[in-house]
View (tube, rainbow, N blue to C red):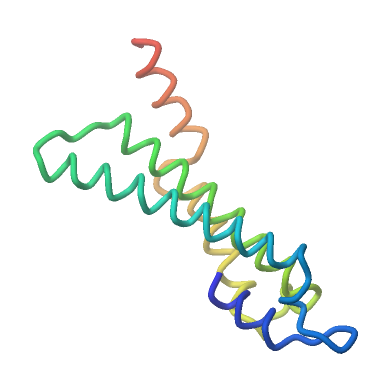
Length: 123
């Protein structure tokens, strides 16, 4: 997100920074909100764990939410960067690849969905 904010502030299109465009501003606001929601969920789970109340259900929820958020946010970052976002000139391309990997490494999103639904359904 920080890279996208910096890029939007310096990238000028039609004589103005693209950060002045409502569509870009809304993408950044959405990115920040999703990141903060994942942080809040993670902090809650960590607080519970530190208090001796570990929960596989909540751990799976935070893994699912954070990895889905990371892919979405980095994808939006690529969108803000435009065609340059697909090049190695900007770190956003690597960030997206790394975020995508988190959905398939150390417990895929589908596995997290299975753990969550099995727990909720008493299976």
